Image 1 (cartoon, rainbow, N blue to C red):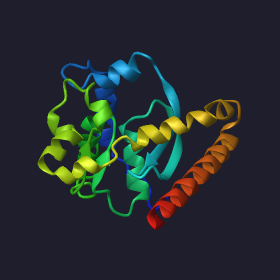
Image 2 (cartoon, rainbow, N blue to C red):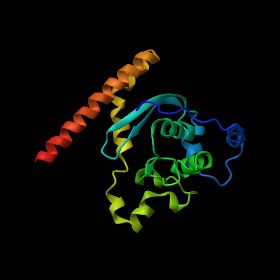
Image 3 (cartoon, one colour):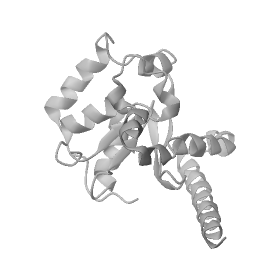
Image 4 (cartoon, rainbow, N blue to C red):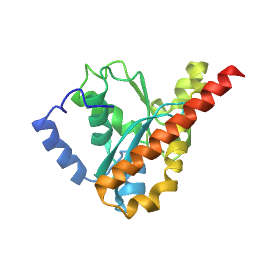
Amino acid sequence: MPAIRHRPKYPKLDEADEKERSALWGDRCGKYYSEYGEKRLTGGIMVCWCPHNICYGFHCIPACEGCNNVFSAMVTRWPVAPERVVYDFACALGPYCMLQEPQFFGKTSFVIDHFHAAGHTKCSPAAFLSEYANADPKLSSINSSAAECGNSALRQIRKSVSYTLQERAIIYTRVFLSIWNRVKALKARKKGRS
């Protein structure tokens, strides 16, 4: 997806964000810190998937993935915010997005997928897709693990990409995801005819 606008700047909020990162974790979601902070994981490729396992797009990130990466991707590439965002750390992403662009994200719900919800022991159940599905049963049919399936497929190219320069790694990833999308689309078309 091509960029349709620049990412807005929020000098006061960016300053507050820096202070927040250096603060103690307190009673906030400890899952982020336990999975990423302590391990000091580096960046990689952040991919946006639809529930049908089709890749919308990707970008390379220099440090571990955070709210800013997901926020920036949506604000700069979506004409209208998605109705629902299913994300590992939706507990943090929702408030982050609403603080910076409340009009853009006003009708978006941010939910944690079924797979990752168990680790969010300090988060409100209001952030869990399962809670929404209890109220609206049609939401239980959402493939909340589409991103996990797609990301696990990227393991096929992980080694090859790690030994190339960034420019070639991007080309290689783009080709891989284009073929992935084409295969998924052909399978869906074939399934529709059956």
